[in-house]
Amino acid sequence: PTFDEMFARNSEEITDKATITINDLNGGTEYAVYAILRAKGSNTLSNPQKLSFTTEEDNSNNPIKIKNIGYDNVSFSIELPGNILFQCIDKAYLEYMGLTIESYFSTEGIAIRDNGPIEVDWYNGGRYGDYDMRMTEDNTYYIIAAKSDGAAPYPNVVGEIYYKEFRT
Image 1 (cartoon, rainbow, N blue to C red):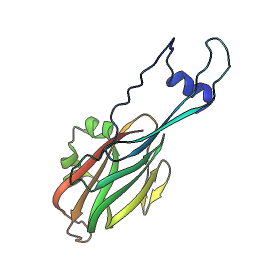
Image 2: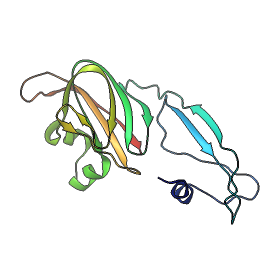
Image 3: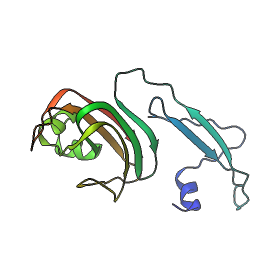
């Protein structure tokens, strides 16, 4: 996006002090917020200011760890050893199809087979093996993962299905 597009989508008019509320952050993730002030009715800009912070770990046994989220990409790891299945999918698709995470992943979903643990850079237009990666700005996604029995050609989910929700 251009500078003006970013201002149009992500700006507020303030007169003295401002509080920024950011929702739906992932646990144990590093974030950076940048702020630039622009004088009302002009193009006079302040120097950019950066605030970096890390959210607290969610203290769960979830093996999916989100490292970075961009406009049309996400970097994550799945810390499950051995045969695994995983997918990164648009939440709206599941809602449209009337599927839960579990029903999609166990019966209907096209899961990617791999051997864990793995690190993944998922970005729009990319490929992971034979699978096309799709991701667009301003959408909610799930990363879903589970151990598998490794059976060919159709492995079965073994044990718990894990997921992390995030928004681009």
